[in-house]
Image 1: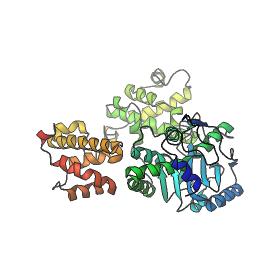
Image 2: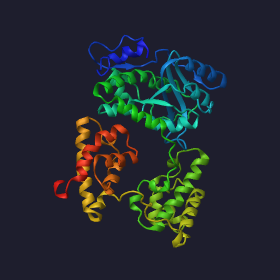
Image 3: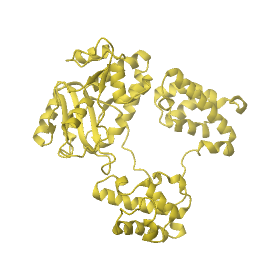
Image 4: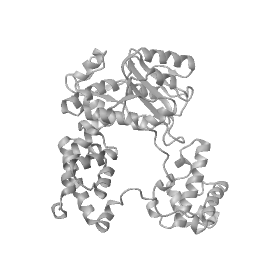
Length: 432
């Protein structure tokens, strides 16, 4: 680790510390300082093979961790692909890469193999980075580190301000990053997002170590880096907003047909599905099951601005749902592979409900003592599964083995096993 990083980390965890290496640092008053310009200025956007080769060589020759970020066009484009990739490393400076012009960054990814990648909210960016050939073997997630360390606000701006004492301008976080050329203010914002990421990492590492949580964090980071790509979601149409209003199987079929038709159109046009047809409109049509274009056009979301041809394509989807036989209609709910919803436990298995109540209370109390969110201490789904089907012998070894089987990390198993053993052993009259 470079001296520059150590200097920034040494002044961490106070709003007056953590200046960039070439800066005078925050004022003696302790007021956070706006970070307005990258220290070497806004770098040119890399958009051809020759420039990419130069950047790859520079970052391979750099030292220390590499800060990595990606910008998507959520809400504007179909899918979650990256439209800008930002990197910064000691000795290489900052690079902004256009993955539309340079869609294969596997060479850069290979050059950084074995290097620790520093990301903020890594699970959000890793899927789109994987698509362009960038897959870390080691990482440090500054958002997750903040959660484990007990910070109340873990957004990048809040963390940089609270830990390093600098204010990041966040006005361009939700813009359409597929825009070309990208405006200079957006590029400045993008470069600043990785400007202090390694400094933040160093400061958080020291704080986690001070709290005795560094090994816990490293286990979490390893789990993220080694996780396989997520499986495609089964029946994604079931996640349409407002689905709780849809009760009948024929209505579910309308949601499914409209959702699938919208998805095909959005993918073909490369636009966000919500720009093609809103979830609210899909649910409106499902509840009404209109019999013709005139009836469909009278519904909210299918108003006067929608042309006859568009109405006909949506009515065709409704008609497909109306024509299905009963055996072809979707079932009301997805197959349940785990325990039932907790609200049903009291009726289905009062003893299990008592176990869950005791376990939740114990986990909440332990999370408060450790100063971290309880979902980071142990996944709520893991607690539910353990309480619904507890091991035959609710001793420490059996509970620890069950937790490990559900994917809990060693540090989590060590921390929660004692309180869960007590909770699982409690009689129902002891949990009230």
